[in-house]
Length: 119
Image 1 (cartoon, rainbow, N blue to C red):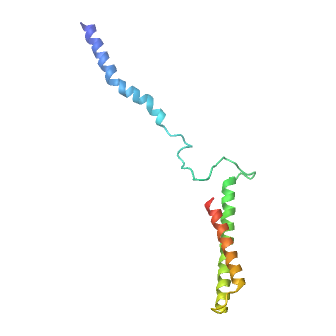
Image 2 (cartoon, rainbow, N blue to C red):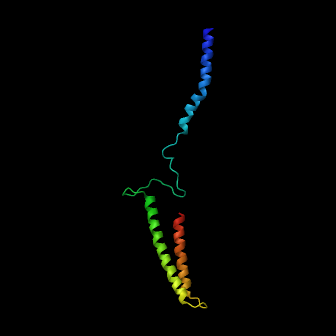
Image 3 (cartoon, rainbow, N blue to C red):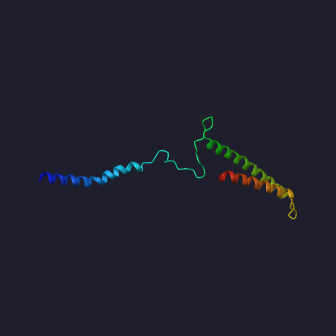
């Protein structure tokens, strides 16, 4: 009789501890790798390419594009000022071809800046 009671106790213990054992077995599968805690940047794939100086190639490209955007933005502002001055000099009934060319140049600069920013 003592053996039957003992078996019943073991059976109850196994049934009670089974969910905990299964959970303990499955929990390590839920662990996050250290590489997955960083959120990826959409459109940018970091393949780990590095330049000979040790810097990230992606970071250097982004830095160069940023500096080019600043340069183009300054040039665009200068062209807009020049356009404004030429427009004030012209007559309201006369449309200069030079003004249209300046607008085209400004549009090209804007498209270049926009294209670099969308990458």
